[in-house]
Length: 50
Image 1 (cartoon, one colour):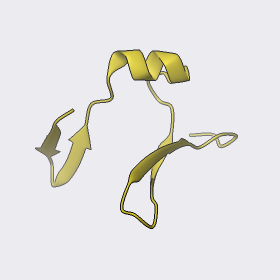
Image 2 (cartoon, rainbow, N blue to C red):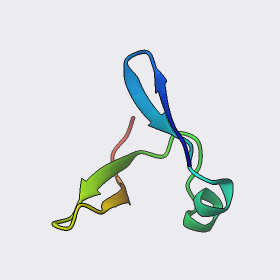
Image 3 (cartoon, helix red, strand yellow):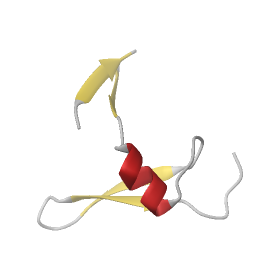
């Protein structure tokens, strides 16, 4: 993965095989969580519209 700067935000592209295995589609809402060791975890936000 590569971090890209766009309009004063940083973005990453999630590998297609990961998105497919998690059944994430365009528009799926995700949030970043950082654990106590500094690892970044992606969590899907479920049950919220828009």
